[in-house]
Length: 332
Image 1 (cartoon, rainbow, N blue to C red):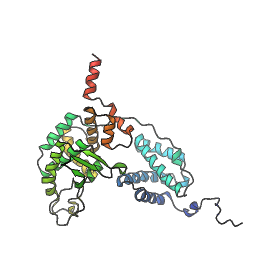
Image 2: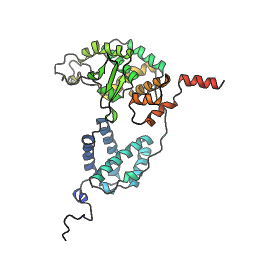
Image 3: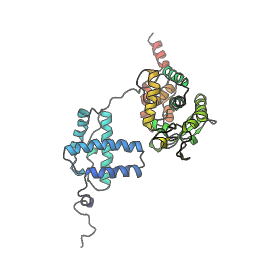
Image 4: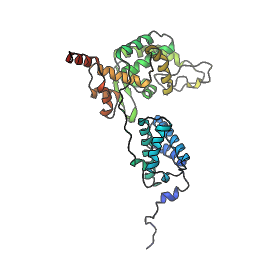
C-alpha cells in the first residue's frame, strides 16, 4: 500500500517551518491575533511589548526556534523579569498569558507539538485596594475645573466629569462618539468596549448640563476651520484642539489619544488633588461613589462593564462613610 496520505512520523508543519525563528513567527501571530481574533490595538501593542522582552531574553540564551523553548526556560524568564527588570508578579503573569496565547497558536498551526507555557504556574499576586478620589476630592476637582474658562480648560472639565460620572475607561473616553450620546434621553452608549461588548449608561442631569455646554460652545471652536479638511466621519466627542500653523494640523478634530488623556488628567487634576492621579482612577472613583451611596456589587459590575463579578469585588472592601458609622456604633 502506498504511504501517501499516511501521517508522517514528524509533523509536516515542522518541515515547512524549518528555518523560521521565533522572531519570524511572533509578527505572524500578532497579525493573526489582531485580524482574526479581532483584539484591540491596545491589546496587540501590549502583547508586542511583552514579546519584545521575551525575544531579547531568548536571543541572549541562544534560543532561536520555538521548539527549543521549554517550560523551564519560561519559568526562568519570569524570574528574570522580576529580578533584572523589576517587573511585578501581576505583570509577569501578563507575560505568561501572552506566551500561552502565542504557543497555542503555534500548536494550532502545527509548528510545535506542545505548549511549554501551559505547564508554568501563575505567580501569586497581592490583592490591592484600588486608588480613587473620595467624594469630597471629586467635588473639589470639579469645582476647580469649572472655574477654568479657556477652551481647553472647559474641554478638560467635560472629560474629567464624564470619567467621574460614567466610569468610562480611558480608551472608551477616547472612542466616544457624538452619535452615542443622547442628552435628551439621559443616556450614553459604549460601543465595542473592552471584550467587544456594548453597554448603556445613565447620564445624570449634572453631567448632561456640562456636556451640553461643551458640545454646543467648546467643541466646535476646538475643531476650528482647519486648512486640511477633517473627515466628517470622525465625530468624536473629545477632540484635539485646532493647532493653527502647527505641523499637527492633520490631527485637528481627531479623537484624543489615550496618552493625551493621561497627560490631560495629570495636568488638570494632580495640582488640585496634590497626589498622583491617572485616568483609571476616575473609573475607580465612579465605582467608589456608587459604593458610598449604597450600590450593590452587581449594579457596579453592570455599570463598569465587568465580565466577571470577581473583578468587581475589589470595591467590596472599601470602607464607606456608612460602614464607618456602623462600625463606630458597634465599637461604642
